[in-house]
Amino acid sequence: MHPDITELFPTLARLPAPLAGEVERQALKLDAPAGTVLFDAGMACQALPLVLAGRIKVSKRAENGREIRLYSVRPGELCIVTVSCLLGGDPYPATGVAETAISALALPRALILRLVAEHPPFREMAFNLFAERLTGLMQLVEEVAFRKLDQRLASWLLQRGPLIPVSHQVVADELGSVREIVSRLLKQFEEEGSVRLGRERIEVLAPAILESRAAGG
Image (cartoon, rainbow, N blue to C red; front, side):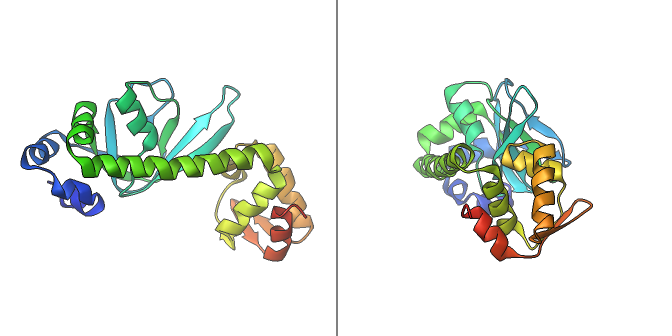
């Protein structure tokens, strides 16, 4: 079995011999450059990528083009959207894009169903991650529904500062807004002295001001 899999996904190191043999035989190498659409809403779900290197962004896109990030999948993590679709036989409800160049091993649906049914440690890992992701998604819903955009933007900047090499469009996508609104808010933040804006670059200058914003002050 690929050594990186057993290191990043320890539950697979303890597979019974027949299942270990199936993983070894059926795992398909997947390499993709940054920006590759790995799955999209409405597509059939056929395999689970086990990320060895890189990062996948999972997001939900509206018909008007607006997008909001749901979560990222890093090495050693499972994509719960994919797991859910594999277990239920449903099409994807969201979009997965290689945020960086990725290297992964893809396990087909039939094998994932066997792992869940026959290997309790794998099943426990998957369900524990479901619980963690659900908590994160509930927090995201609360943020979007109940906090004003300027508060959410201030919190976002504080979490990623002091120097953030990112475009306004990426910030808008992260927050589920549109670039024009985010750019206008960032300009306000710059005028009050809390940030300095550059080309695809935001520098946090006054965290205390942003903390007050984030708290609704």
